[in-house]
Image (cartoon, rainbow, N blue to C red; front, side, top):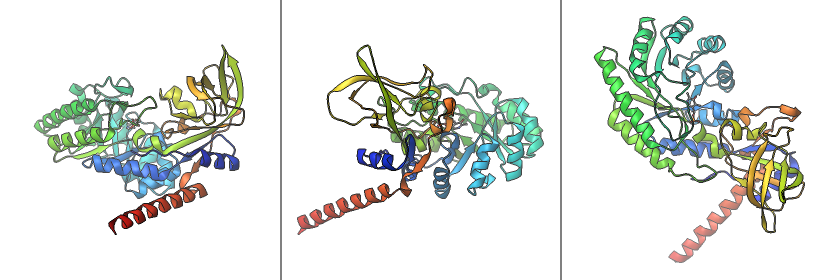
Length: 400
Ligand SMILES: *Cc1c(COP(=O)(O)O)cnc(C)c1O
């Protein structure tokens, strides 16, 4: 799969016009990822989990492609309302909802929610009587970078009792959901969860409760900086086959976050200082773990780092600008020597990055530029079109 990446020249041109650090988001890359998912997992509708990256232009692009959305708070609902997405295209997929979120959901017509405890039923029934609800079950997966099954999900044996209780409270139980954990490297985790849910659907039927919807959550991986042992296309096609086999009549949904936006953003930073420690160079960048690189901490993630310059590679360490010792970004990576003022490019930083950035130490949030609106994008498109024309011409000559 193609991944959005600035060239060295494009990076330097942008850094000459905009003060670093800044992020560049490609909405076309997000679109490509969305289309990839539609193609390889055609039997599941998409709720984009906007917590991964709620940049308005990405939300707009997803909305125009027909995506639905996974929201967790009134704030996320407001971001979508602001770009004209109706509540009917959202699922309130935070198993525990606060009053503000419930109130906003009622106001804008969000009628679909998930829950994983009996204590949530009264709240949902009070604010949105008759709402469509899905019970979230805990599933097993030891091959996810981010575990979501310790904090979330009821044990499967209790799931149907909860749905029946919801029905008795006047809610409309429609199905089951799960999340195998984020950045899942296991296809089997989805397949096992699908089999588990198939059994629960049958049991529900036997209890006189007809379930219609299955939501398989997110978790779809992006290639990691250190290489990845799973092919997302193959993973999605296997899951799709199981959906067709086990749930031919259900409405199946997924809630991708990371997969849709992970490869859609680059970060441009500058070396603002250098040190020598134990004979090795250290470089201080103008962005760190309290900023757009917060995913290094919160998301347990590392992003591809691209340094430019001549000379032999040296074992080097990169740190952020804050006065905290935790602000270490890359240890012992081999890069050519850097000088103060050099720009450094970090790619595949579209998910769980800027959205959890802070203003710690008074550093401002890195702004997000939209690639498609920049003259560099137009220039690149023209270059690519010229190459294409040339190839076309050569092909014609060959035919003649
Ligand atoms: C975070 C989250 C997602 C998205 O997860 P990814 O691993 O980024 O795909 C989907 N659904 C729910 C309920 C979530 O909390």
